[in-house]
Length: 147
Image (cartoon, rainbow, N blue to C red):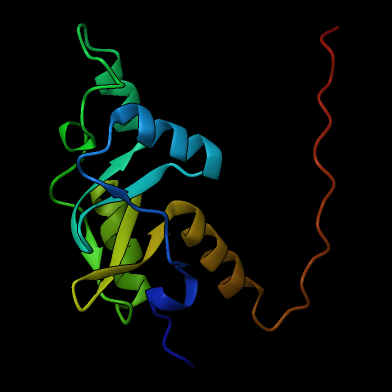
């Protein structure tokens, strides 16, 4: 059985944000790209990660100006970072144990990918699907009106 690594399932070349950019910039970038986690960099070096939840939390504090505060004020300065060849099982176990929403994939000091809970669910579906034909996509559930 082939070894499952995080590289196989990660999102390649993720969107990153410099630490000096504002909270408003980060929020706008997340909305535009439909993402919930941004690796924070200084140059090419990873210095943190900021999540949509982090942004919402800090923006609710009194006196915070999202257009002036840098991302470095809201980021987690100790992101969970792994190399591309990290075993998928190990990364998933660590993410679950610590309730991490993402693992930043770093190679030779540079961000090369991100592995989020959405990527983990895709990996799970892929692993479970092996050996069976892929199920056709289901139509979206219809909302029912209250009676």
